[in-house]
Amino acid sequence: MAKKKVEAAEKRFAKPTMKQFDVIIRPIITEKTMAMAQNQNKIVVEVLKTANRAEIKMAFESVFQVKVKEVNIINVDAKSAKRGTRYPGMVSGYKKAVVTLAEGEALDIFKE
Image (cartoon, rainbow, N blue to C red; front, side, top):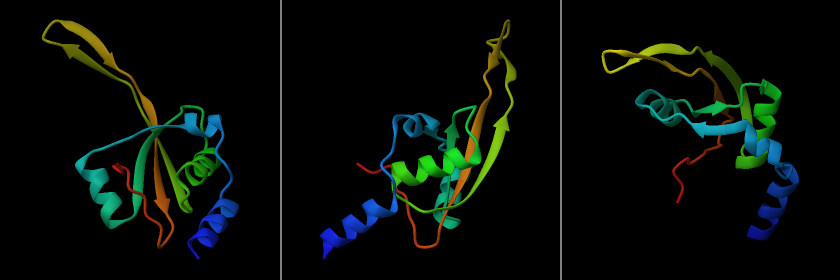
């Protein structure tokens, strides 16, 4: 019975490619994103600057084997900062995606 479920899951999702692994860079871990993951079933990740919604959705579905309902994208601007009191610097900008998982789907980011 368990073997049939595994075969069904393999048929439902395509095998991930290297490009799809490169689209998702890292999860963004804050108090707000952890609350979103628990209460609203939303995962926040940093993604490739050139990625679009369709690429992020396909990458998430094939890499993590979950059904994605919606993808929202936010471009975070670069900011100027100071190192100490004297030396100017920059905090680089990035693109992040808020991925809403379908009902009944779950993703454990901290799986060991």
